[in-house]
Image 1 (cartoon, one colour):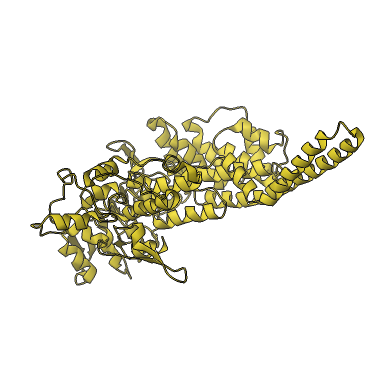
Image 2 (cartoon, one colour; image 1 turned 90 degrees about the vertical axis):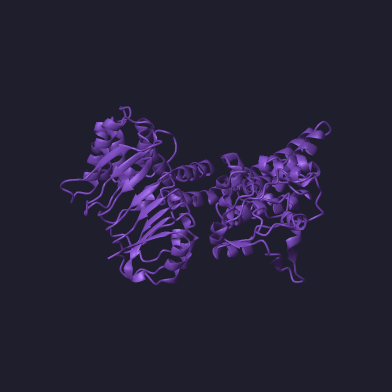
Length: 557
């Protein structure tokens, strides 16, 4: 995995990962062999041949481990151009088997790494068949037997099975985004923690906690066995049995106390995790971490205070007041200002749109300003009436950016759903919290201050204009993976290395950026059709390479 991750960082895709291409050296070092089918991401756009159709391939069998590319080369004497279909049947990803380079990406290698893990766990290739056509048809249809059915006698751990099946998902978007994410899940399993692939619940976390403390569980089981043996002899010596049973029960209680104490020690780490997720506006993950921490240790005063604040942000005012006031029966860290706000709203249902600005003002004045992004996250993700919601968002933007006297703000429905939002030409606009959770397909934020783009929590944005903002760094935002149009002209964003994360970009404007460094990785944006850049970069080798590839280069003064 580390070797493939390194290759991906250089833009190289292997395309033929299988057991025979991975060897372990005398000293435990792992080598990945046979890079003959590998290619650069950028080269996938240069193919000018016709895709190979496997539907007409004769019903022939392959020799063990024979790649489809080598079979096609040996059977097609007149083929002059490189085959699009490449790889080894049974390990190939569906997009390889379909014979077109358009959908081949880093996730193609992720699929084959999942296939390797599948065979390691079951001693079987994921997809088997009698002929080439049979194997490829099964690959395209995603007919992969579950690991438990393929090798029930091996009792493959559910977590590892989930990792393998996630990596081999038919849709590349549902696989691991990177090899690093796959490695992270494998490390989570090795360390005894839940993996993302298995969608862990609280019960999963609890079971794994017990497994990580096997000694304590073993002592409890031994104590239970002592109790059973002792009770079996109680008929012959009731007093002696009673005494021994009481001792065993005391030992059992001691071990239970040990488990509880261990859970209490772990609980604060979940609060730390919650704080990190909340800071990154990963609100669902933050709430799950908080609930887990409180389940492990209900006496966490700080945890209950956070729970009350989260409920306030969800406008569950009565529940929030019940917790913050301590009426729920567990100790809670007192926050007088927040409690006062909860008491003010405790008898009210959810606030109408017209009352949102006043609620935001209450958050600012009652020690809850940090909860404003979460407030709008829950508001904007729920169905709403745009005729009342957007005026409330506009008023809230004015409230959170007091230097603004007149706010330029407009909205319109986007084609296919979502919204087009224009907040451009507001130099004093920095806080865009009211846009958090909103389904934005197009955002014009040109000429504003320095907004926190992480507040744009929802995926699906296709157009983002940041020209003239004070931003100096372009964050790696997963929710912007669908971005097609990006304008960062007249900004301070000088490093374009993160641009490769936005693989769907078709139009990019990086003109008039002082001190700009043209990253060679810009060529990895293989869907790019138009690039606007300052004229001084006319002879830049990366710009020339893009022009040679057919990208329209627009030179700005």
